[in-house]
Amino acid sequence: SSARTVYSSNAAARDSMLLDGMVDMKSQMHMTALAERLAQKTRISREDQDNFATKSYSKAAKAKSLDLFAGEIAPVLDPKTNAVVSGDQEIDRFAEIENLPNLPPLYPHEKFFDADVPATVTAGNSSKLADGAAAVVLASEEYLAQRSVPNTVPRQLGRLLSFADAEGD
Image (cartoon, rainbow, N blue to C red; front, side, top):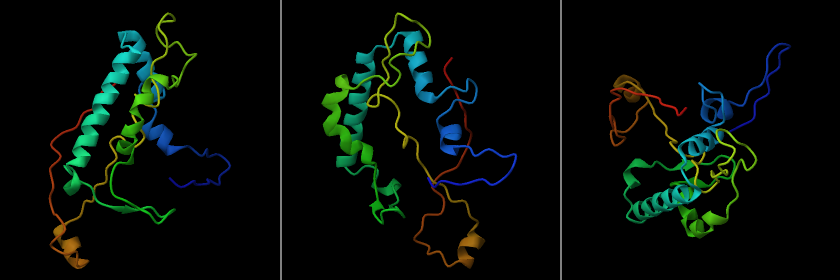
């Protein structure tokens, strides 16, 4: 994301990635802190979280090796590096999965629910910043025709039927 400067006597610059993607609207807690609180409250162990992360990485690595998502990933040019990003780089970290038990908790001294439960959420077993990354282009057929977008570009890949949001308390 690019940094923006706001010039105003009564405006505050706000980090939109932090506020829109990493902070729970209801509790105003950072998502990682909320995950730690939920893990403490429901007694989800560090071992369970690491095992789940290992299985998740394994499934993602297998899907990548079988090229299962090739038709769903559009290459994007990184304007800072001029490199083409054409897949999920996080999956490539699967080779480092054996280090999961050695990673420190992200909030080692915070007690969000129970002071007797140690912190368990780490950089390896928590959601990544790229989780759920997506792009959607909405345009009418007329707009596409006016701009000579070739017919080889998929027109309708799906329909939004509904949506929901949930949070843990």
